[in-house]
Image 1 (cartoon, rainbow, N blue to C red):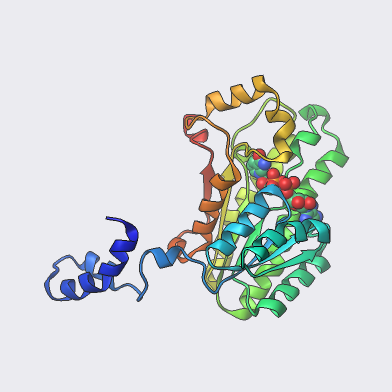
Image 2: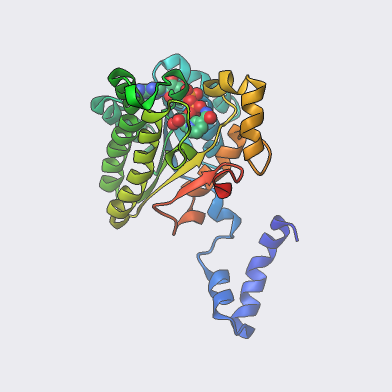
Length: 295
Ligand SMILES: NC(=O)c1ccc[n+]([C@@H]2O[C@H](COP(=O)([O-])OP(=O)(O)OC[C@H]3O[C@@H](n4cnc5c(N)ncnc54)[C@H](O)[C@@H]3O)[C@@H](O)[C@H]2O)c1
């Protein structure tokens, strides 16, 4: 049965089952809230903050969150990058705010959180989409330079830390709970013989912080999860994936037979942001075509 056909029948089924069903679980499921199952995946009325929203993954995520019903603040290092991501969403009828900020600064993080709440009146979701850089600083582990290490940590870990802290302080103040979604990587769990020391350390820390924050912020109704993608076809990795032999080697290890697309990333993030994931927290969801399942 098509889901929209099922939606129409739920109230009817619910009233029949009130009288006849023996299965308490079915009765509870049908009574639960007065919303259909599909509505639980929607983000209607929610407000999202997307640092790095001017990037490949962040831009796709912002568009998907808005398509699912949210309003979104898109943040990037220049107003132009933020606007470039916001404009097509606006043109399609979505409500978005484009903000310039450096989220490795505490004050800037506070400013974007305040601006988001001033504009939209609440804050429910933060997706930390600033990061990457691994392919630009590949060095042998025994000689990994301090400046490259610091840069990768700033870009990936500090950005995630500061944006989350500012957003969560506001979520606690507003008292409506929330959902924090970090972007880790398969590199958090899989080593790679290719000079990735700082990146694996940063992503490992992001996965650990995801679990730590989930335990600390649950009391405020704030869930914290992460996704861990393998290669996603984006400008960040275009050079690497442009090498046919390298790409063939990667694809051969991915059971579903291709690298990720930004569309492969958006669905899991919308799910984690939604009420359908209301009992999911502290998880790092592999979005990797089965890569880590084979290791
Ligand atoms: N592309 C991949 O293959 C892949 C795979 C696994 C994980 N990831 C992770 O996904 C995330 C996004 O990757 P992407 O490919 O979309 O990268 P991207 O470079 O396209 O996007 C990152 C965005 O963040 C912005 N940014 C950088 N520093 C900032 C700062 N201090 N303040 C505000 N904005 C800042 C950049 O301008 C850029 O628009 C990263 O954490 C990356 O590690 C990517």
